[in-house]
Each structure stands twice: as structure tokens, then as C-alpha cells.
Length: 415
Image (cartoon, rainbow, N blue to C red):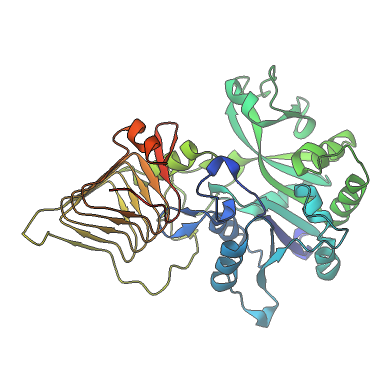
């Protein structure tokens, strides 16, 4: 038996993010709870990657407006207790003082009781707000073989984008070792095997459990620290020469195609959230949700299949390059290049194009929705237009962000 086969692994999902740049979608929910891809929540991608990797003891650290997220996890992510497996949300508990989480490292520090109870050898720490597939078992294996106390997952990015990421500078003589962790550098050095690229942190980490415990305890005592995993914990391991990097390009996910292999999107802005949806509806999708060998798990309730019917007077409907979720009904309308979440209704004569509609949205007869993201339970009245004129949208109190019109959950649409 290999050394890896004897390792006990606990997965920690950091899901306390506020997601200010996704307002108003995060006005009433944490960022990891934001719906994505019709039937999913963002957290489903992280959790699916963890459990598909074989790690079935998972804690999800929550904080900001967590009710929607907690409910989704407890009702969807149920494991067999017979073998001691679980996925459980853990809210901020103020175990270390009368303050909420001060950062991602502080979240783990305040939750060290979970490590004490579980007594893992390895801790896999992942973010909850990215869209991707990844086999963490391969990263854990590389971590154990490296002998490092900390391993950081990284994805290759053009060197011209380095100032948008936390960048990992590797040792040219030992390219799997981290020489420095640079926060949004203006003059980065390219990789030894690809001078036009840099390694950007993905926000996923593997730690020896004892090393992680020591690091967060030490960090908690430093007043000037921001208590951040990437900004404070990883540099500490780098300074001790105990850090390694795991190149995402080396990760092989079963069932992946050449087109979607290596796909990873940070959906932290409205534009990136929208663009990731457009990736899904392309005729040959850049990210393939139909990989049955590495499924993305979720639950959307007992809904009927989507239904496409002609209008009451025989009006034809047109639907193409779109994803329609269970419970969707399109009656004589036009839907193109859009994602329709469960229980969306599009009435006859309506047009929905280049848009993302979250659950329960109703688009009335003859209404037009273009280049829009509409949150849950919004009713677009008959004949209304959204996304046609930015000035009109702003005048009605809608959010206009980078060419997109965004409506909050249940927001009123004036006639």
C-alpha cells in the first residue's frame, strides 16, 4: 500500500464570501449560493469535485447571508452515515472570540475544532465560487510526493494578465517549488517552459494537517495580518521553503474532452458570470455539463420536463442555442442563446435572447429581454422591454453593468 493510501483526508470548502461585485445577485444570498447553469448553485461545482475525487468527509464554512446556502447543502448534499461520510455546513461560531471570520485563514483558525475532532493527515481547502472540474486526489498525491507542507493549485495565464491574479513565481531549477507568491505583480517573470505565461493561484490548497494548524495559529497572533490563505498563509510556507505548486494542466479528469479540458472560470464579476453561461450554450460548449463520468451534483426538486408549445393562436416558437431547465414552459415565444432556470415561463410573442433567467422568472406576452441577468421570481409584464435601452433600464432602477442589465430577486418591473 502506498503512503497516500493510508492518508486520512478532510475537505474544507470556504463558502463565506460576500460577493460584492455580483450585487444585486448577492443582496440576499452568499456568493456560493448564487444559481448557475440553470439547475446548479456555484457551491455545487466545488462539492462535486471534492466528492468525485473520493473525499466524502466535507465541511463547508459559511458566514455571509448563509440561509439559502445552508438549506441547499443540508437538503441536497446528504451522504451515507453508515460509513461516517458527511457534507455539513458550519457557520461562524465565534469560538475564538467575539468576532466573525476576519479572512479565509481566520475561518479555519476559528474552526480548528473540526480538525481536532476528525484528526486528518491531509486537509484539502477549496473555494466555493469557481466553475471547473478537478480531480483533487491527483493534487493530494503530488503534494505527498513533494514533501511540502503546503501545495497551491495554479492555472496558466498569459503574462499580460498577471496583474489580475495572485501569481506563483517558481524556482527555475525546481519548477514545482514556489520561490515567491506575488499579489497582482506588474513585472512578472514567465515560466521556465513558457516565458509568455505565469501560474495564477486557483484558490485551492492541500496542507499537511499539522502544518496548517501551526500556520493559522501563528497567523492569528499577528495583528497586521489580513488572515488570508493566499496573502498570509502561503507566503509563510514559501519563506520556510515548504511550499509546492500543482499545475492544473497536469490534472486529468475522466470524461473530459480536449475542448473543455483545463476549463476554469472565476465568476466574481457580472460579466464573467454571464460569459461563463454563454460558454455553456455554445453549439460546442467550452465547458461540458454532459460529462457523465464526472457529474456535477445538485437537486432541483420534483419538477416536470421542460415544455415547448405553440401559442394559443398557433404562433410558432423558436428556440436554439439555449439551455432549458426542468419546469420551463415556452409558449409561442423566441428563446436564443440563453439559460432558463427551473420554472421560467415565456409567454407567446415574447423574445428572450443572450440572457440568463434564474428560477421562477415570468416573461409576459410580447415582452423583450436581451443581454440581461434576471434573478428569481421577477415578473416581466406584457410588452415590457429589458436590455433594449440602457438609459431606460437605469431610469427604472435596474442595474446596468458592463453592457448587461441585471434585476434583483423579485424586483418590480414598471409597466
